Image 1: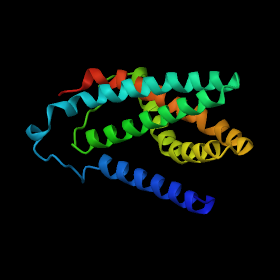
Image 2: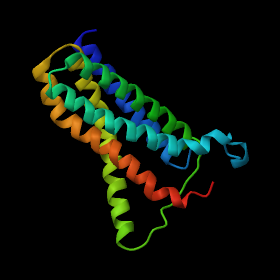
Image 3: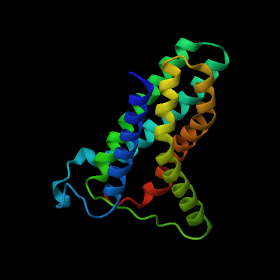
Image 4: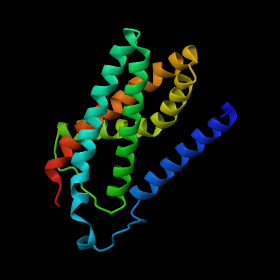
Length: 179
């Protein structure tokens, strides 16, 4: 696959995913207008997503450890696994939000400000990280080491922040779930 095609593919996938998430966050789209029709397994998805995000956080840290020790093959395998898990998270996230289930954070005072700061930065950086990760993957898989290093300087800390804050957001909002 040439760089021009893969760049267009990465841009297209990133725009598509961003658009789907924005549509699902608006109250326009809902695949289950009757809340009683939502399958029971859907209510476990937020906890599942937090587990997947937490696992990805650990794998990203382990991946950094491996590359610092020049264990390139293990580093690649771990990043592929992390990418697969992050993709699974994305599918699960989309399924959950397609139900139309909404939860409001109920905390007050300074903790409310902290929650919304973490949530807003998490959302913004989650939108940014997908194309960065995809470009990083492309350069890494093609063994374009210098290009990969330059991209990873940005994609790695953002991806790690998004996975860690995803868990924090879940832990902070979970007490307010009403399902």
